[in-house]
Length: 125
Image 1 (cartoon, helix red, strand yellow):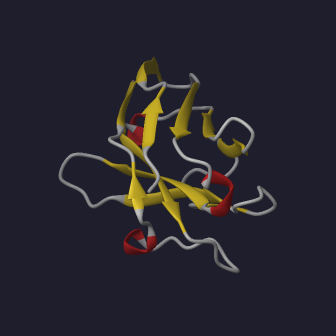
Image 2 (image 1 turned 90 degrees about the horizontal axis):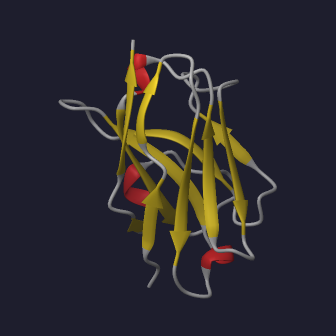
Image 3 (image 1 turned 180 degrees about the vertical axis):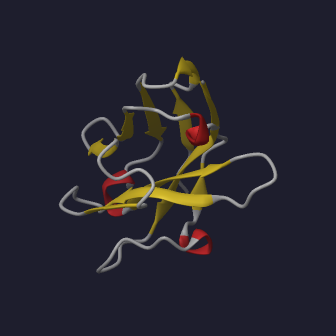
C-alpha cells in the first residue's frame, strides 16, 4: 500500500510559478510510475504529466508542455511538479497518483492504483 500526500498548492497570479510536492509512504515508491492529474469544477479529472519509475521517461499533456516539469527523487520518496507561466485555466485541484510501471506512461485514470487527497491551485487573472 502506498499513501500519497500532496502539498504546495495555493493562490498565484497569472504568469507566476508554483511547485507541488507529493510525498509517498512505504519502501516501494521507486517501483511505481507517478503522475499528476487535475480536476476543475464541473470537469472530469484529466492527466497532466507522468514520470517513469526510474525517472527516465516523462509525458505531458499538450496544454502544459513547455510550462510544467515533473521530476522525482526516489531517495526522498517524493515526486514534484514545477509549474511556470501559470494561466487561469490551470486552476484546479491537483492530484498525484501511482501506477504499476509500463513501457509507456499511461494517461488512463483507472490505471492508477493510489491517489493523494489533492491540493488546490488557483491562478488569478
